[in-house]
Amino acid sequence: MNTLRAKSSLASIVAVSIAALGLSGMANAAGGDSANINILIETSDRNYAEIVQAIEGAGGSVSNTYQFVNGLSATVPTGALAEIYSLSGVKSVRADQKLYAGPAGGYNVRAAGGQSMEAHSDLDAMAAANAAYSHEGGYETLSFGGNEIDQYYGFFPDSMNTGNVNLSGNEGQDSLVVIIDTGVYADHFLFGGRVVGGVDLSTDVGTPNEGANAVWNHFHGTHVAGTVAGAGGILLPNDDLLAQSFEYNSGFDLPVWDADNKVMLLLGGAPAASLYAVKVFPASGAGAPTSTIIAGIEHAIDMKVNQGIDVDVINMSLGGGTGFEGRDLES
Image 1: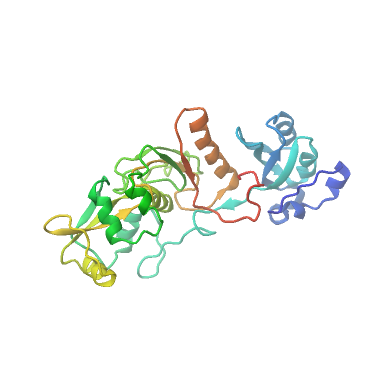
Image 2: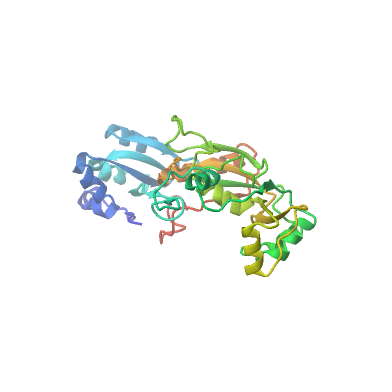
């Protein structure tokens, strides 16, 4: 985690190299002690006044002061790090490192010919790829319940081990899941109006790409939301190649939708749950600093604690293991 932990005298702190803070590469690249770098500061309490004053006095600026965790994020000259770390209320200082949706560096969507293409919603990406396969069916939003859910688990493997829970009548109804990611395309057929709101905390705010529920956002957040709470299906004509291939290779017949079509059901772990999108990554799918991720977590907590909105789950399919879980600011 490259976090400087133990407190010591000011003289000792001055002697500690910037490398111990995990900031040396950033400092050297930007020009040494005069360089501005982005940091996360963990504090002993939420009395931030002295720390904010020191940061601003050194020519830096504060980007976030958190209300549910003890800490803040700031941009400061590297030459001021020792002074800031020496303040009595400061417990640790570390680089405000970037996190990504999915694998480190994010996803790179490629069209069939191998060329890179800009990734927007999943349906837009399919169209842009000009995929060789197409069918004459359509897409349907489903209200699961009754024998539809029995059909689903009768014909499809239950990869998430939610089948017994769902079949007992618990499909996530009256639950709200906050998806902290690239945003969620609210009009996607998988959600049927269950995306109840969203907020954009990303660097897209104030640009034409602003919007937590916009179709042009990177697909990852919508993909994750579908895994959590998707409830839909792809209609396939009875003689469709994909339908026939599925049935031949699985040994099961697809459920019948009507006289002309079968349906390939798409079901998340909680298909009746509601969703709220917190967009922390820009529309391109580029990374976001840890400070923004924490701001997204705090937004969800504020919804529950101060706004009376009964948030049940925060989902973050992002970043990766740090080896310091439970002891860093975002944990």
